[in-house]
Every structure is written in structure tokens, then in C-alpha cells.
Length: 448
Image (cartoon, rainbow, N blue to C red; front, side):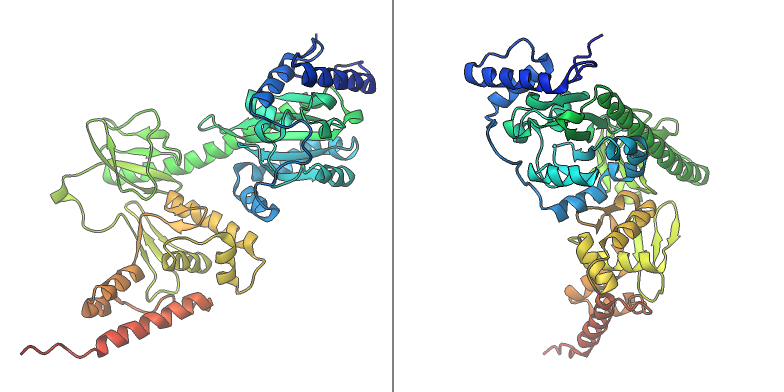
């Protein structure tokens, strides 16, 4: 039975079929009429390309982000954890059958590529490489863009590509969905020269996509279990109505008379959200969120939901409504740097401050990933920054800025991470001491 999503059917001569498709492509561009030999999925894609003004004679795909930034985005992308799985599933196809695998984000921007070195070099000549846009609107019909547009796996063979420059290639792509939200995370694509096409390639790519989604689902369930463990500790200790939310706001569990199902939008950095008929407080709960009915204003505690203690300690302490965490030395330094830079730091700046030299971005990202297991959504990304956490050093600095020198001295319980040798932390430590001393040295105002 003919599969309408496969570009080269079993038993068909690839060279002859490519020639027929080239003639059909020429006819379609000249007359606006698509010959009957062109599959519906390709004809529909060509129509979309015409409507959006894609130039079939354009050379090269558009560079939308530089390769280094593409690498940064890839390391933060959910699919970056699945490269070993993809290599195990696609390894023989990549190297023995001379193919490459690429992964694009949900917008069709390529973030990662691997496979046969000769094919990788050849693909760079058509800019089928990280940082380039391969959505249909940007590059015409291709397995990355068309799989995302149709939300279905598809093989695109030779002149089925809308742009003539890509007629010497064939590709099979499949979208990958977030198991929690159902949203498209991106697409997996396997590409090679047109004479290496095989009808079974698409099935293999779709299998890889389903295995990746299963891996993400397993990871999600493991994370949910950790959040539920913390929620169980909270309910056993405090009781009362409450709900545990995943990072996307999905309700994982709720005690009686609380919120029991659906998804709740949790604003970044917020402490309260409006729900039907009332207000709820939100607090970090590991990698998730704890939601509690808001108490009347007169009963609410004056302290912030989470407090970071950095002064007079070799290792920072994070106090949340549900737990007390003593951070590692490295995580303490990361937390201190983020507290000192409330607007956030990208991985390059953070790595440079932590290690004193460039080139340690991967290590910095890995540490932040582990720290986020504790902080959850309170550690935001792009750039890395703290949300909803009040650091004791911020309290001291606010008091100094307000001219409350005596209060600042009283709140200064010790030096900032006194044993840390990170230059930025040492400099901030010294600056704070100098500022306190200068404020104390100011002569008292004499009234007339």
C-alpha cells in the first residue's frame, strides 16, 4: 500500500523518479498548476510556499542566529538530553548509509547536527547547519519545515523540495512534542543525497521521535514524583488545602477543597495569583510550585516566601516555606553571583566570573541545571536569574541605599561567603564592608 508521506516508494528507481519530479517542479512554477504525480502533502506545501513568497531560486538558507548561540540554545533545549538515544537508533543509517541527523527547534531553526562527516560538509554548502532557518516560510518545502507545518512525519525527495538548490537531497523529518503540554518542541530530521534515499528511512525517524517523546515522558514522571514527595512532606507537616503544580502549571495533586485538575498559569516571579473566586499564594516546591489559599492580609507573614542567607556563611542556606537547603560551595557562589546581578547572567558571563576565564560554559550550565533541582522555577534561564528569593545581602544594600546605616550594620551578620575566592564575590564582599564603614563614618546631623 502506498504511503502518502513517503517520497520514494519501494521498487522505484531513484534517478528516474527524481527526473520526473524535476519536470513536474518546472511545470508547477511556470503554470501554477501542480501535476498529478506530485503528492498532496507536497502540493499543499508548494502552495504555502507560493503564498508566503518563498523564492525557489534562492541560494542558501537564512542565518538567524550565529552557530555559537545555536549551541547555547541547544544545550538549554529539552531535546539535548536525547542525543545518545538518537545515535543508538540512527547510528547505522548515519555512517554506513551516509546520512546526517539534525534537530530543529519549534520555529525550524537548526540547533544540532551529527552524522557522516562528508555529508555534514556537503550540507554546510546549502547552509543546512546550526543557526540557519529551515521552516517552510524561510526555506521552502523540506522535511524539517514541512513536518512542523503539517505536524506529521514526512519524507521529501529530490525536486519535491521547493527550492531548486536542494533537489540533489532527500530528507525525512518528524515532529517531537512536549509530553506535558502537547506543544511541538522541534523536529528530528535525517538527510542525505537523493540517491541514498530509502522508503524505510521515514519509519525509522518516526520511531526515533516516539522514543524521544517516551524518554521525555519518563523524565517528566520522575520529576513529578520528586515534586509529589515534597508535597507529601508539606501536607503531613502543615495539613490544610494545598496543590502541587508542575513547572508548566499542571496540577499534580491537591488536598480536599483545593484545586484538583487542569493547568494553572503561574507568573514568573509572582507571589500570588488570582483564581476563580479568590487568591492563591505560590511558593517554590523543588522543581515545581506549591499553591496555598491566600490568608487575610493581617495574617500573612511579613517575611518573603524564600530567603537566601549568604552573609557570614561558607555555604549558603536557602529557607523556603517547605524546606531548608544548605547549598554546596559552588552552588553558593552561583547563588551569590545571581543575587549580585538581579538582571541575570548568561552562561558565558557566569562561567567567566566563576572560573576566571572563558571556555567553561558547559560546566556552568551543568551546575545551574543541578541547582535548579533545588530552586525549581525560582532559578530562571535565558539569562540565569533568581526569582522570588530575597537574599540577605540585598537587604543590607537596600538599607544602605535608603540611608539606614545603623539598620544595615545590624543586618550585616558577616562577610559575603568569606572563604570564596571567586573574584567577583571577593570584590563585592570588600565593597560592602567599605560601604558600611563609610556610612558609619558619616557625622551625625546636629540639630540647631
